[in-house]
Length: 233
Ligand code: SAH
Image (cartoon, rainbow, N blue to C red; front, side, top):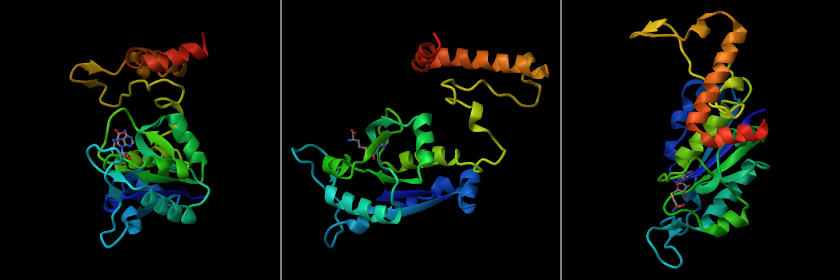
C-alpha cells in the first residue's frame, strides 16, 4: 500500500526538493509513498488568478482566500480521498513523534501550505482542517513544514529505512532523548569511546545508554522528564 501525500502550495517548484534524496527518495521509487503537488493558483480568481486579499479589519499583509483554498482542497480530496486534511500553521497542535505515528497509520495526508499572513479562518472550519505546527517559530510559508512532516512520516513506513536504522530506540520512542552515539576511531583528539560501549556486555551497554538518555532528557527537556515521572512515580 502506497502512503499518499498531496501538497497544496503556491510554490510547487519547491517539491520534491529534499524529499527526493537518500532513503526517502528511494522509498518513493519503491512506491512505498507517492507525492502529488498541486498549485493552489490553478484555483485563483480572474485573469490574474488571485489567491489572496487584504485582511478584514485591517492590518499588514494579505490573507489566503477561503474560496480559493477550499476549491484546491476539494480537488485534492477527489484524488486522495479519506485522508486527514492538515493546514500547516504556527497556531497548530505541535507535530510530535506520536502524531507522526498516527499519520503513518492513515492512507496518506493532504497538506495545505499557507503563505502571507495565513489562511481565512472559514476555510479551516468549512473543511475541518487539522492545524499542525512544526515548532514555536514562524516560517515564511508552510512548504518546509510540510516537507518536515512528510519526511518524519515516510521514514516510519515499513521498508523505508531498510535495515539501515531502527526507529525503535531513537529519540522520543519511549519519551526519552536518544543516548549519545560513537563510532571509530576509538580515540579522537584525546577523547575515548566510553568504556561500557567497548565492554561487549549487552546488559551493561543497555544500562549505560538508558542512564545517558535519562540524564540528557532531564537536563535538556524538563517537559519530557516530567511526563516520565508522571508515568512511573
Ligand atoms: N500570521 C501568521 C503566520 C503566517 S506565516 C501567525 O502569526 O500565525 C505563513 C505561513 O507559513 C502559514 O500560513 C503557515 O502555513 C506557515 N508556517 C509558518 N510557521 C509555521 C510553523 N511553525 N509550523 C507550520 N507552518 C508554519
